[in-house]
Image (cartoon, rainbow, N blue to C red; front, side):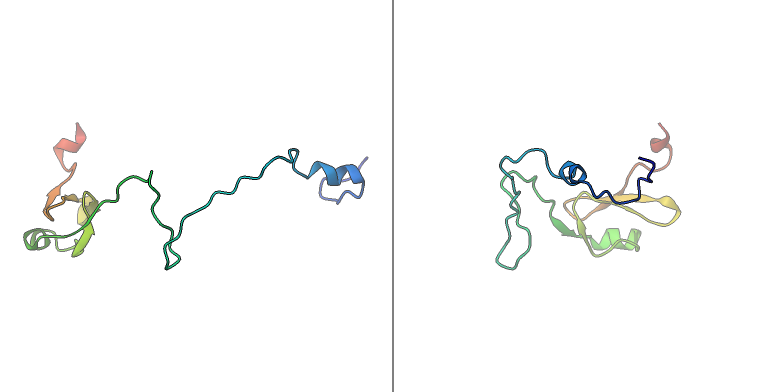
Length: 102
């Protein structure tokens, strides 16, 4: 009885304890795949945000923004400045300055 919990057990009861208690049906979650082998969207999945091109105006004001982003995404630039890119490609400051402190 004075053995470490690191030592293997050789009795039969030890082997039975490690097995699953229930022998019922096993449920496998099936992930639908596209013909290319990539996981496909399921009917109950939330809608995917579209990818938009950032407007030239916004790229001039915020040169650290990539040319294409997901609509509604927030990007952090220098000095922790954040901008949100809308579905039309325009970028506007997001929760910055005094408004964020409230």
